[in-house]
Amino acid sequence: MAHLVAAVDAMKLEQLRFRAALQAKMEDFVEQLDSPSFTLRMKAATDKMGLYTKFLQDNLQDTILANGEDRDRMLKSVQTIGDMGVELKETMRIKMPLLEDYAERCGHPTLATSETKGGKYLLDLCFQDKALCLDDPDSQHVGCCCAAVPAAGSFTIPAVPDGRRMQAGSSSMDLCAEAENVGKERMDALRAQLKKTEVGQQLLDGSEAELHQNYPEYFGRCGSSARRLEGGFLENMALKAAKAVGLAHDTKVPKLHCTPPSGNFEGPDGSEPMQTAFWSQSEVDTCDMLDTSHGTKMKTQDLADVCADFCGSESIPLIVGTVAFGFNKSAIDSLCVDSSIMATDESRVKQCLTEATAMNAVEITVAAAAASLMTLESAKLFYEASVRAMIPGTSSRPSRRTRCATVR
Picture 1 (cartoon, rainbow, N blue to C red):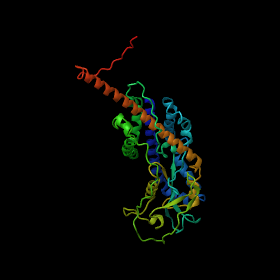
Picture 2: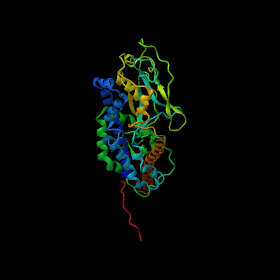
Picture 3: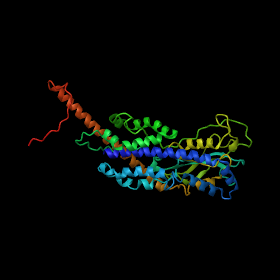
Picture 4: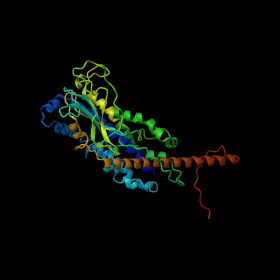
């Protein structure tokens, strides 16, 4: 049991480390994307989307795509949970079949969409020199879509405990301390890696409160955050609306008046076509003429920040275009909806959501099991104290645990 608790903790730190690496990689990608050399290549290219896709693949090869070191490390930590499931055989009797291939099946990037009916899958950030709507074949817009890697925690479904608990048995082992000892070396290394970057430190610092909120009983038994994983792992999956960061100014072209176009696919629930989202600056002016909230002209990094807000903390923001060039909706969809980078596979998304629920159930079961053992140990101590209080001359003596022989 202690090994499984430690493995769950390590998996969550690996997920945080993976997401921190993704964010750092995307910052580097935007910088290269906005370089003069790549802008010139885009202007000279006949197949602009082909060049853009190849550039994106090359830059993300070691993160979200197959054989990436960061991705493989994270998936290995997820797979460890399945390998160690034998310690929770009774509790995981129903859940284990779902988790056997979870890491492989749900470790590939897929298009992330908002959870609401008629939800969003694409953000129209701004347009280039022609005042044409996104769905016009001759338009050039900067778009934003979001990739999710379910096995990295991109899809987290609130799991409902089924009411069962592992029986604590007669063991008096301090499971929390044992779990810490089992995984201490690896956990310390993972924490140190996360704390090397500002993004990693923020992920650790910002998630502790949510972890305690989601598992109050467990952390009430297992002590302070210094002893336990400092990372949140039941964060909300909902995509956030884009935040307004622009200020009014004189435009050099007339404002657009467009209807947000629909996607050519349905959401995971099969309800209706997914929609394109607009933000406050989508129809105001060309990308290079937009102003930010701090009074400077909009840069590609500013647009990337809006894209990151749209995608939320658990998804990978993919900006398609820069302040210097853009694409029409058909071209953007060719990258975001079905491409060599990510796909829109409704059946796979549904399956991963089901398996994510099972994974959360495993985590909750581990927490409940640890809490049960701690509760039993507390009951033992309370009973011992009560008995000692009733025996004259023993109430002030220090407690000593003894091993009792069986009288035959």
